[in-house]
Length: 270
Image 1 (cartoon, rainbow, N blue to C red):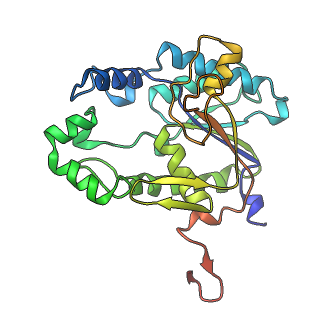
Image 2: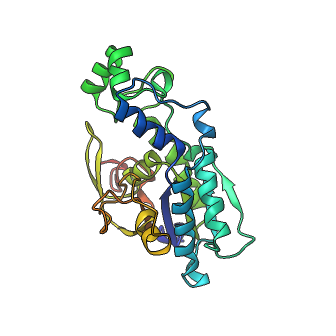
Image 3: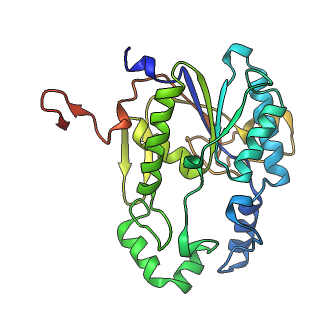
């Protein structure tokens, strides 16, 4: 079996639609508050009304594809906003069949923020100046807040998820629904890349950016806007706002399950 045959035939990486947490964060920043006003666990934060429209629009976009091109395997973060996005896509007829199961995978969850949870940038600087300085020195790729995760920690658990794709979903069309950090960190080990480890900016090759949730929403639900974060590059042509694209990964040998390609002659990283 070749390396390419051990990889999904197609892989979509999708960030959840706008959440109530995204709305609360924007409000906290606008008001200059130190804390984000949320009365629930991060895992329980639902989609906003706009986020639901965005998810339904993406489901309709998938539904317009031929059945043999739609996702047949769905892996989703157990967090409510990601799960609601997956349910909306299925309800819109966006999967290969109505019986397509939605599989929870805790490795696709949001990054753990530890003591910095629900704090704005100004809140971190005010309440945890030592952590603000540590993040400035280390960069967010390596900085791990007390009780939380660094981006490296997230990548470690996602390498295991990539291994699951290779072992159990080879040759299938797979849809992954997670969070911004999940999409970015899955791209980090999977592709040839140029990475600024201080600011953690990723430029990946070997993927195709599909219409964003926001862009699809303009055609199918004109009141939907493009407030979601930019994950794969590109902007919404209507507003010039960052797009939140579904990313279609071209089938490639999953050599990136290792940190770096190995020198076959010496059996060690080169």
